[in-house]
Image (cartoon, rainbow, N blue to C red; front, side, top):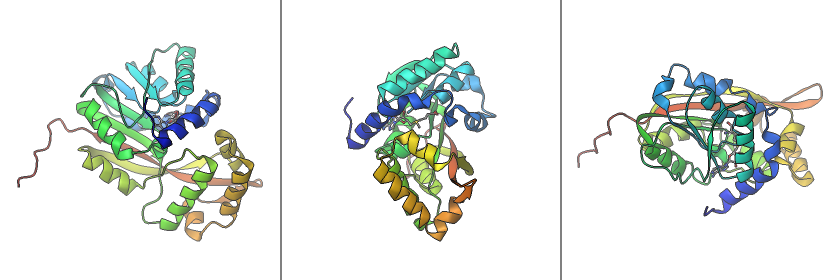
Amino acid sequence: MNLDETQRAAQAQFDRQATRYGSSHILNDVSDVENALRGLDVSALNPALDVATGGGHTAAFLAGLGLEVTASDVSPAMLRQAEGLASERGLKIRTAGHTAEELPHADGAFGLVTCRVAPHHFSSIPGFVGEAFRVLRPGGWLMVIDGVAPDNAPDAEEWIHRVEKLRDPSHGRFLTPKQWRSTVTEAGFEVHRCDCTPFKQPDVEWYFRTADTSEAHRAQVLELIENAPEEARRVFRLGREDGRIVWWWPRMTLLARRPEVAKAAPKT
Ligand SMILES: C[S@@+](CC[C@H](N)C(=O)[O-])C[C@H]1O[C@@H](n2cnc3c(N)ncnc32)[C@H](O)[C@@H]1O
């Protein structure tokens, strides 16, 4: 794999932290994926590609539906973790080590591409979306679930960007829902759903432990929380429960389809 600086940072970070992403991790709750795919004809989604599979929670869920799943990730340790989770559950998945920005799969090879809680690490989200379009057959579906920055709230957007970068240096950027819609539409997809729900994050200590944040950066994040702008306090519902800092992050579910028939190029 040829990796750019951002991809290398993500690989190093997740190789180091892989064992934290087992079945006790909050990502083990896949009700968000279940909800996103509800109503789709599962038999028409085969085979499926789960990009940036992490601990394999989404991939294992898809395999449990009876889909043939390729679980891919830039981090070899995460792929081992995903394999372990699938075999613990008596499920079969295929793993593939590659980046999200360059998918080494044939055009139209998949009926479903999923990517959950990962694009904010990518060096190019448009690159990933363009590749997802290419590897989906006409009529295939793209499902993305990820944290987002709020639309039309620049102070909150800048604040969460600084907080996340300090906590986890492999963080790239949270797009806003509007940016997601336009990125996906420009790649040729039809957006069927793009909505956000507030997701209560575990307390801040958990959040630091997951990324193994350095002491110096922890102190800076706590200071940013203490002095958060009003807009960030409102958007992220910053507060305290039993002395612990709690917050809610907007999590986006996006479901888009590669049209059955390619759109005609505009007449010149
Ligand atoms: C939080 S985990 C993903 C969780 C998982 N999708 C799930 O549903 O449980 C983020 C993953 O993104 C991967 N990742 C980050 N940047 C990547 C990139 N550019 N290409 C492929 N994988 C990447 C990391 O290695 C890590 O395993």
